[in-house]
Amino acid sequence: MNRSELIFLYDIKDNNPNGDPLDSNKPRIDEETGINYVTDVRIKRTIRDYLYEYKGKEIFVREKRTDKGYVQDAKTRAKDFGSNKEEAIKNILSNCIDVRLFGATIPLEFVKNDKGSATFTGPVQFNIGRSLHKVALKRIKGTGAFASAEEGKDNKTFREEYILPYSLIGFQGIINEHAAEETKLQEEDINLLLEAMWNGTKNLISRSKVGQMPRMLVKVNYRENNFHIGDLIKGIKLETQLNDEENIRGLENFKLNIDKLVSTLIKNKEKILNVEYIIDDNVNLVLNGKETGFDEAIKEVNPVELKIKG
Image (cartoon, rainbow, N blue to C red; front, side):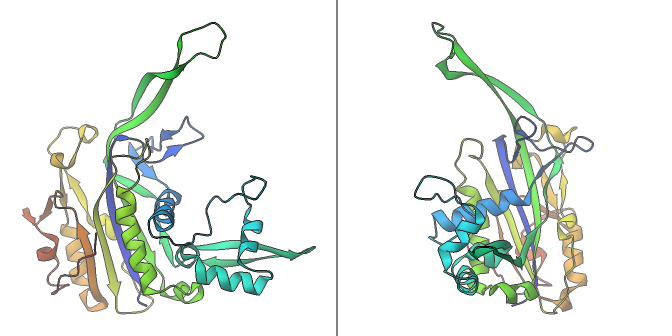
């Protein structure tokens, strides 16, 4: 397995990509820059849910209840996979794709007063996602479906929520070939990861996530061990003719300049094995002042198209 870097862009319209429960569930925004950010936990949850619900894969980190209706803790969850530490660890790595991808710290207690844990560093790690532009925060007020709880009153309850009219969010990630050996990560797992990032994002159909769409997924595979460029996402710049980035409302309002990304890839092409990608047809890419297709832009690095299935 080779080391790889990931770039993933998706957008959301009139909704909340990642609410902060400690701040009225508002979308997370850096107050100094006006940039919307999304935690790595959120994207990992998207991937886990897709793999479990749509691909039928076992997931270690998921809500599971005991016979008495209580939510399992991690220690009890580990016991689902064996009657002793060695058996449980072996079966978790064999069966649970999320541990092979993201790692885990697994508490183990099969004999009273014999506590321990197994820690696996995840081969796949994401940074905190950030919007490529300033966003606008909107508060929406409305009425609830039910009357006030006060007896004899027929006034309906009021509710309020916070949304972003639009946000184009960018994540970057890395796949570490050394950690992959420890968790027994396979190429099939990586293919499922890419599918889950793309299709899992489209299949977030909860009230706060509907309208979320994947726009760009790039995987740079390196031929040289222990090497990656880093910060590739900084090579993508959003360009708009609007006076204020907060007024962006869709793909039609901007183009993505990939000058720096392409030049960085070309500079390091001897260390790059290939580049896999999928780009939404509605995304407008610009290279050297002209609109371009991604395959044409990176042909010096990637002579043969390697499209990710979406």
